[in-house]
Length: 121
Image 1 (tube, helix red, strand yellow):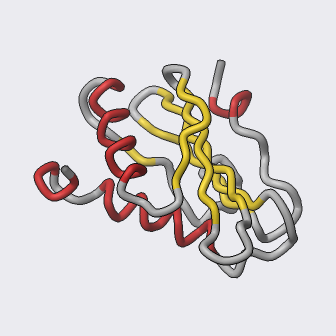
Image 2 (cartoon, rainbow, N blue to C red):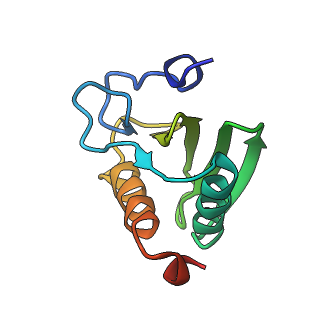
């Protein structure tokens, strides 16, 4: 299965960001080495983020949610490991606008991903 088959395309609304979208402001995370170590690093990053909950981890696919501090809005965030990259998708479950929250979340994950190993542990 490919990332395109596993990660749903974003709807025609501004509350979703995907590295697979043609006009995406984000690119997939890149890694060197094996998938197991990259996955360990990504899970370590996610666990540091507030209001995170793991829903599914089946090897190459991870699905988590983040719940907003106010009003309990839920965003679905999915990751798919393919070759030496990790494709990401973050989308609000409800509403049309997210005030940039999903993009900021993926940018935050990317910034932590780019830190040297010692800093991210």
